[in-house]
View 1 (cartoon, rainbow over the protein chains, first blue to last red):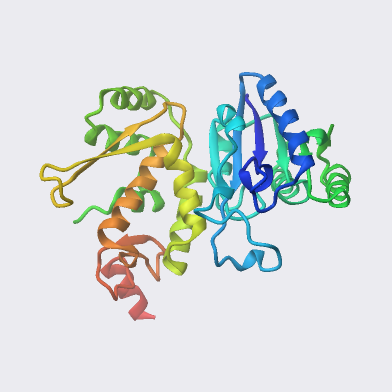
View 2 (cartoon, helix red, strand yellow):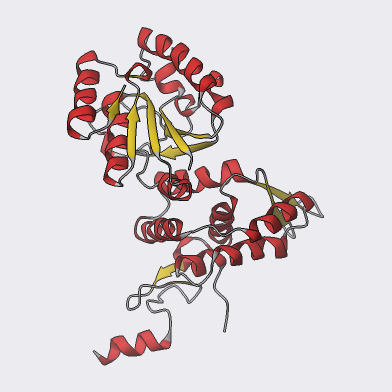
Length: 170
Length: 161
């Protein structure tokens, strides 16, 4: 039985200074932590990267600034993260399981625990964890390996994960 | 009777994991890919979740046309798994030969082969030739622009009501 790690949003949109939703200092701190963590992940852990790739006319994001649009540098995975991914999944929504191959791949692996890391805590991490819980997976979220553009939203998401979704927050 | 393309048969549940592997073995000349496919025949992978998701994607394709979710889905499978080789004897697009090679044995290449088959079909015939039967909900292709039913039996059962 494998362990699975899902890393959300490790793309230029959030982590590069030219990214549309660059998270500034938070991104720089998280970059260092994430690389250290990814280096130390046991070999039997299967790592999936999930990146957002949005259609230009997607009305789902009507109330937020357009980002991660198809064909823009926003969607590129940062070079420093590239060596650790087994499989890069593109999604059009916050949930990594919405119309993506991830559910099918997870069903092949039957993981004991699925760990979710990355950005942002209140969007990709929260909604991915929620759907994984719905499917009956045990989910873990190491808090220092996640962040949001806003501390309030980050804390709210961590509370929801921990208290409402029974996710193991460490 | 004309055989439907591989992706249609898979979405309709009439082909298995082994059938997809066999279809690749029958077409590829790339030795390492053949080796990977031959080894894969010894194990069996459950494709039921993929079949369900792929069927939903096809339905979405019929209803809404090509959209980013479909492109993301197909890309997620194909990019890590397959590489397409296009050979043309005269340098033009007429008479070109396409083949695929498997990039990595641990990548989801079986699913990628099905997605590649869908892409080839769209390239050759367009999306309007992919349809879903109004009666039995099975997918079918190439029965004409206005076709609604997959077979005479379905057509007959609808007209009897």
